[in-house]
Image (cartoon, rainbow, N blue to C red; front, side):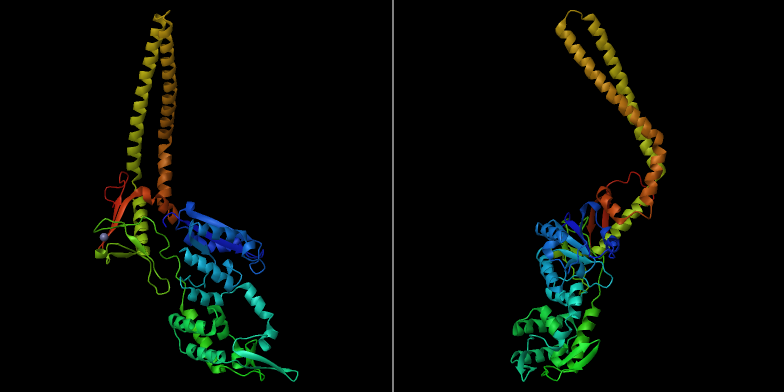
Length: 458
Ligand SMILES: [Zn+2]
């Protein structure tokens, strides 16, 4: 989980749809992850309604990477970016679920992804899939004369047509409307759907369609006006139909998106009692139970912290730490270090020069002893190479020292800038913090180095 990829999936179907808009919405969330973990998948110039999944290369690639378990988080604007209709969307949602992918929608009014496929069916059915809506507009004739509709039998007689109740399904649908007129939560809805899924042998999406079909109270809707159809035997009443749809709308609206919350599992803390790494307990966005870290030792199961709370503490601490860096202290320490190194290099260079001189003298006094001279020449060459290296190091040290004040100022400015993004701070968190441990009372951070911090700081 820790190192797994984050995918940003975007799709633009018309030139008017700007990729920047989709990307902009995702930025707040993306900046919580190290840049190296983020992968972009973009399908361009393709309308999801016209092309099927196979013809959208980026989403195909994304699904492939998910199957390889290389992607554990998918960020997208809304459901309609991902699929062209609710049925296709649910197929993809199943794969997200199967591979434990966290899905984050950034759209303002988009409902949070649920691991319950029933919830996803409800949300998908209300999503603004382009093709579905376009399709619906062209289906006006079908509203008055559906070729086939569950619960009805189409009877043609005397050059006309009648729709009569098809039992026992008509009664099941009648009972389905009655049951749905009393629900007030998605959970209650799910129980009823489970029952009628079996009775009517229809998927959740089809059941939702049934609830939204006025034909069942013998009417057709045109521009929010219902027209009574006298050739249809009604299965439910207009009153019941309205109440059911009001309920479904209320339930849908009650569920609000919870965004950018406990999205990252980084710097996983240890239990302050036993020292074991804590584990992530998955939260449920819908029941407002947020993800937590908890000790897996059952004796410490009450040692729990919300991940978002923990990460906020960590982030504040890191910012505070960076602010507390004492630039003067840092300058003194670094310049001292540079001087020491310079001294060492100078000594080394001096001794190398002496060495070379000694070898030169030996070579001159050894004329005639071939083997000895070869050894001395080789030694001289080695010393000369080493001398060049050390001279280069010394040169660099002097340069660094000369510009150090400037460098230090820039470091300080960069580290304490309020513009510094969270993702940048996360990237250096490992370098700065050795360990974090959690108890029910407190969170303790062990910093790796306090060399540069002011005496009075943390
Ligand atoms: Zn423990």
